[in-house]
Length: 153
Image 1 (cartoon, rainbow, N blue to C red):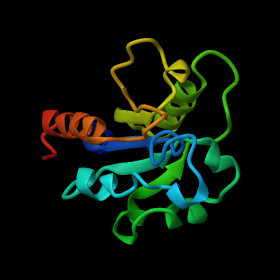
Image 2 (spheres, helix red, strand yellow):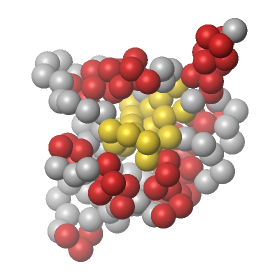
Image 3 (cartoon, rainbow, N blue to C red):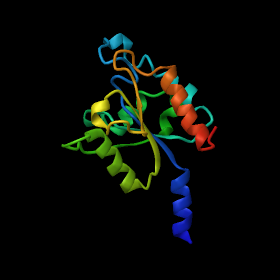
């Protein structure tokens, strides 16, 4: 019976795997423009229980506490983890995410990332950002559609 409850909870969990560079700011910004796309996050996830997991090279240089500090205070508790050790091979970011999902029982997820090369071609789980602009209303709308499909909005 506990197993069924855990399965149902896992089915309800929604997780965004979030890259930083090319998503929360363009890849070629100066220090004054870092996180210029961050204001999109509260707007996107308002009223939801979506967990955020960092899937960025930043996790190799910053602790989870430091990574949380980059987020607006109302979203910091949503940052629940980081993907972990880098994967060497085909589709590295995708493989890191799959490993995190397997370990943590996550079944419903999306990756907000700017690197299509790190995911299988036409991956339904990738919400691709333009690295020259970072996240935009296009990606916000894609996330909202995913949340609506699952009955979260």
